[in-house]
Length: 418
Ligand code: NAD
Image (cartoon, rainbow, N blue to C red; front, side, top):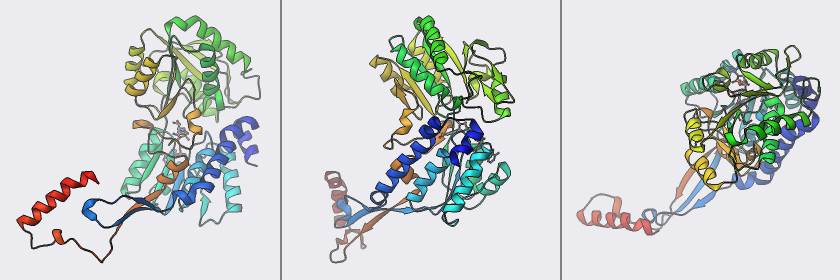
């Protein structure tokens, strides 16, 4: 039922659905089932001299009733991965899936209502009106995945009730190819990551900056790779754009652009061929808006430092990718440029490591999840100091004296050795 629904929404192949939805979720479920007892156990920490003798520990507790609002592009993964984390932390969960992938939203509602107690895990479907009501209600936590624009609305509404919020947002994630990169491998991985789910991936490479010296070989190589994958609007095995409106938005982005490959689309059928756009200006809509589709702008640079300085002037992206064999470039990219997370010589796959938190920075998000980071996101950690009653150092009690102050200062000074 879930696969069929996603096929109706996206025409998505079972292979891709397994890879990006179910496979990912099975890993998250297994990890939570195996580790949640360890995650939720009391953790002892060392005491301080000033509090001698005492036991000190951190006690995780659930936040309470949590709301998960999700985006449409991976309708199950984005709704259920945070739900797994929230349930593992002991909360109850209400999921509000996106109304845009309507078949998947319906299927999620059906399968959850048939298998879970609604007081524990429930789905409320709907669009702006229903979500607006929910975000003005008194939840103990709101976890939102979606656009930066709507993220601000959610953040503002949650602030009225001082509800803690995690925002998993988007942005324009760059990929950079340096002159010494492994060109064949770089193109192979770039094409896979860009056109996976027809480009409707929050961490897809949004645009690519290529060193000038690679121009001819890069353009030849990327066109060959796209042709090899048989991506075209005649290929009915290619994932569709989610709606007519979203397809039209991509068409609009091509206005006044130099399309050097692809560019064919069928708006009513929601088909849009992988399309390469050459040298758009930074001011054009295609370089301002998150593309979230099958269009890849290609820009060339001469100097790596200039390329880094250029992308640093933009909002901090959710992801960034560098293809290089040069450690100097790698160091500069990692140390000077702020982004949510990313890869060197790879794209997207940093998501598939439960030891990494996944989230943005700046306008691409607040907070993180996946694996233990997800558990932390949905927990409160109580700090507890437990003291025995058989012993007392009476220094802190009045009557205060000069002698007591000397001893307090000594304790403060000695604390650093403990
Ligand atoms: P969206 O912001 O339009 O919608 C997200 C959710 O908010 C939906 O459930 C929708 O019903 C609700 N919503 C929409 N408008 C609203 C409003 N005015 N008031 C209250 N609720 C509203 O985003 P989208 O189009 O579903 O998803 C695309 C965006 O999500 C892209 O920017 C993408 O990068 C981002 N995204 C981020 C991640 C991540 O993990 N960081 C994952 C997937 C998608």
